[in-house]
Length: 135
Image (cartoon, rainbow, N blue to C red):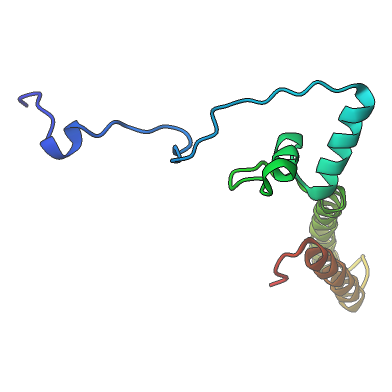
């Protein structure tokens, strides 16, 4: 080993983190406001699904920007939480079906299948409301 670095990678610095863009935003605008104004700005930004800064940028220049930090709408966050609960319920239902098949002491297979189909239908509705594929 001679300790030399090949010419094709010698001048290429390693990049870590986010890629730099040509029109990077390195300038700050500071705005003072009272509690009521801040609450109004935050509420309007949340309604649009944006962070406060991205919302104010969209009002000033017409676009929140490509890298704007978008936040899920409150309804989407709640639907996502319900979807997680449905996943837990489906897992529990699967465990019940397993025990029922092994011991025969729990509800019949037809009953479990009917409940599972209801859970799938609810899951599909939540997925559609979230704008996700139901496949």
